[in-house]
Length: 275
Ligand SMILES: O=C(O)CCC(=O)C(=O)O
Ligand SMILES: [Fe+2]
Image 1 (cartoon, rainbow, N blue to C red):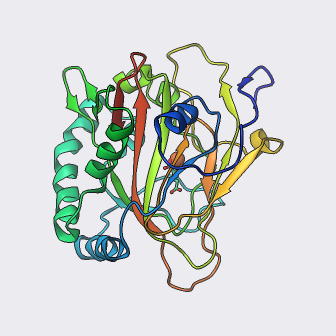
Image 2: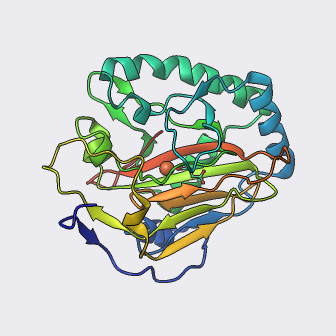
């Protein structure tokens, strides 16, 4: 950590996990609350069907972010923009269409589309704000909705495109939240910890800043909130805050399965999805 990094923000107003309303969404983008929980986003039958569809279609890729806190690399279907941060824009956008084709197989198999449901739920509380897939001039739509198993945990990282994708359209978003629908959880572990620690890296604006992994020393004194990935729920948090998923310490065969997407807020208030 550089001493000169400027930490922004103030303590969260509370540690409740409110539902999704216009007020809680604004508070989350403004980092005034740690998370929003949409309870019962999907039924128990839909959760079972989603996990069965993940197994039937097969998670064909693996994140390349190893660290001591990661027991097994997360496996997924889809294309995370972050995994292309050191490659060309053309390489990323070439993967968007085939990845949506893989995703469509899972949604067809389980009979519902959690990303469309998420868009509908957000639209219902802020109907005046346009919402849709993020778009890049000359390249088209981004991909949204990584279908993944995260039983092995993640390292401490943050997700904020202004730092990790400064030369992309999403790099001009003013705020970013992560959304995760959990179709199954683990018997132990599996919780997510979010640290209230927005900061401005001391790099010139427009320079790439490594968002993963972050040194845990950075958040050692920060306020934190830990939430459980309850099957059927969708949880949102401000992903500019450093966060990590704890791995299941037991080999009990239970798995943490679901789908995640970011929602960015454009300077004009429009909401854009990508992963
Ligand atoms: O699965 C989770 O709870 C969080 C995963 C994550 O790092 C993210 O969605 O940005
Ligand atoms: Fe993340």
